[in-house]
Length: 283
Image 1 (cartoon, rainbow, N blue to C red):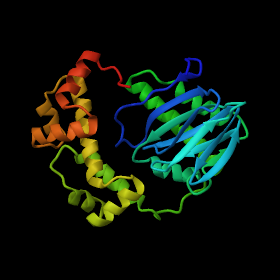
Image 2: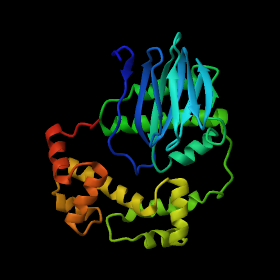
Image 3: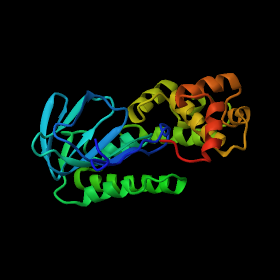
């Protein structure tokens, strides 16, 4: 694949417990028969086809798509897609996930129907390209990317979505629980405390987190704490032990094991890498 065919793509390394975060985005002109899958993704992925033709297969059904069409990849669903032999497609895409991703996708109306859509104009493509134009590092641009993603999802809601019935999926309880975690993650809180803050049982909280966040509440809390600790380590002002205690871990050895599980490297190496890179965004 040449640089002309693959003009822009990246992936952030840790945003699993944020409300909404861009994982990757790009604009790709595919060679003939270029394909992906059958396989699964761990996040949502939306493609808009700029030109050409190709096929998308999901749940055993194959769709022939062309310019103006789009398709949605849902986490943990086996899919495949391939460019046409004679007229291969060019598409732009965005990959994302987070605690709010499923709720927002449900509001687009694209989850309860065929995983393809037709835009009819260039607006969705333009909104996707706006996300791709904001790929440099820094918290300001990251916030702008999330804002641009919300604008894209809002347009999908306007075109294909419908207002959800209030309180039908228990997301209001999940919001209360997430807010409690946000305010109290640095203290010695348990999942029982989180459930009590939302006014429901632990078992009910578990079911609602699986339904709305796609992970158990204890994993959400752990990921949240690890991401907060990583942000503290990146500043270079705290030791590993200080970052651990500041994010609710009373045992530094346990913190190191959990950190490595979710971040892939021990906190000491993560901190050293942050200082070496001068705070630049990891890809």
